[in-house]
Amino acid sequence: MSDLVYTLWEIHTRSLVDGVDNEHDSLTLVWENIKHNGPAIAETLALDVEDETGEIHFIASGQELAERAWRELGAVPEKSFGA
Image 1: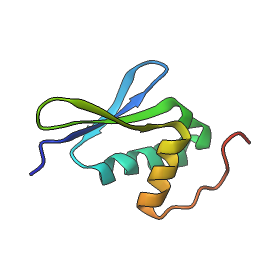
Image 2 (image 1 turned 90 degrees about the vertical axis):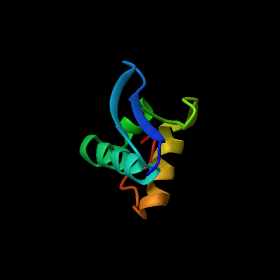
Image 3 (image 1 turned 30 degrees about the vertical axis):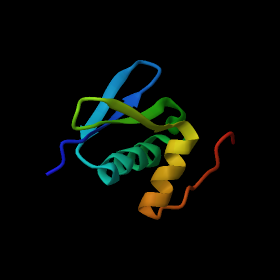
């Protein structure tokens, strides 16, 4: 079992969205947020991971995070950013 914790944040309010123990599930959270709230929501999200030593590493935010979720999940975006 992994001791990693992937944490999804809403960056404007600095609110925790959710934390999970693997990157696939964290990217699923991103994709679910985009599906329910539209592509612009990705600009408010950031993902990091806390490793076994307690060190936090930034993974991605905004469009880069959305594109990472699309690649990982094999999903196709319905709308482009900036539209």
